[in-house]
Image (cartoon, rainbow over all chains, first blue to last red; front, side):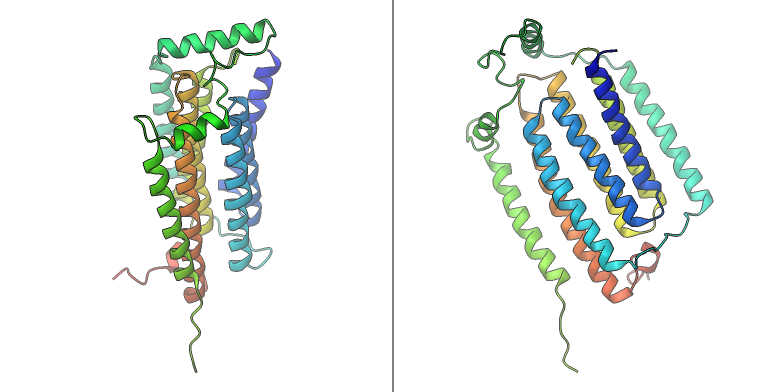
Length: 194
Length: 104
């Protein structure tokens, strides 16, 4: 077993173990911390896949943003040391059964499905493997997308040509503005004169 | 990448998705349900990036879908937490069973 595989299995164990503990822990603060570990493991998986930019975004947005927000809302709505009620037995049993059967069915489909990479994709992957085997630096003109640079991501994100993503980019900016205003309107405290 | 195939990563994302579904079905606390939804969204992101890496290494589309899903998930989580805090003010509880004002 190579070092790469060992690292992969450690990352997988962190993700799945953190996820299971996050949905079964009965102390809500601990559940939030387990969720944090699971999200960090996912960022590690993105590093493992050579998507450094997405891994950085994952850490900044999820670990630095959403989990901190969740922990703050836990502080606002729970007394310390609160233990959640146990779920009703029949509900957890039936949920577990449904989830296990659905997961087994999905994994069966995945194992039977033949995934075929496009010819260009195979070529790029082989170029990269050859370069790594010779321990030489990767030719960046050939492997422009195997290790996507932030420059390439930014160029395609803001391009108005056929494969550009400028329209969803602008729509998402409007969505974030709407969410910002919506949060303020919903959570604002209205003082009533008495 | 030696030895780790697409199926390994799809196994992780499937497991994470159904862990999230289990949490969503069993939990009664709104914040923990939100955490389960975050797990589900993250498993989708893993899928997009794995397919992009292993099958379409010459393109970047999976990356952009992941970025947009992360942005939308952040917006969704912040609105959900605003709603939860507002509910807590009026009901003094964030249990989904207590939020039945619109039931009848």
